[in-house]
Image (tube, rainbow, N blue to C red; front, side, top):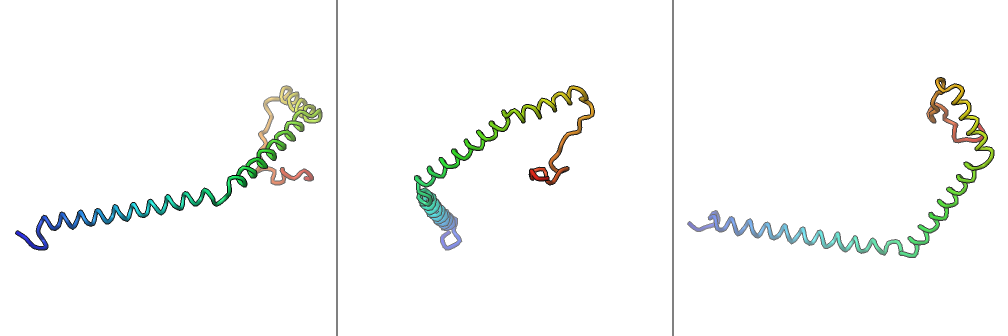
Length: 109
């Protein structure tokens, strides 16, 4: 039996279709790879490094500021007062929640 509906022709047609799909997928992957490589030069490495170092310095400064504030005499005094209060009356301590005090972040309130 030969003709367009023959099993051999269907197999060959299916193989061609599979081959076309594979070629299209490879083309898509190649484009993806090219775009990925182009991203490497979107931000020059020097800028990335400089930005990173600025962030590191800023973070270091913020951590140092917090440490200085935490270790200050005034903070130690406030924390010791809270500790003594907790030791004196441990059962009636109500947990503080930021949602209960919407202006907690504002030092003037």
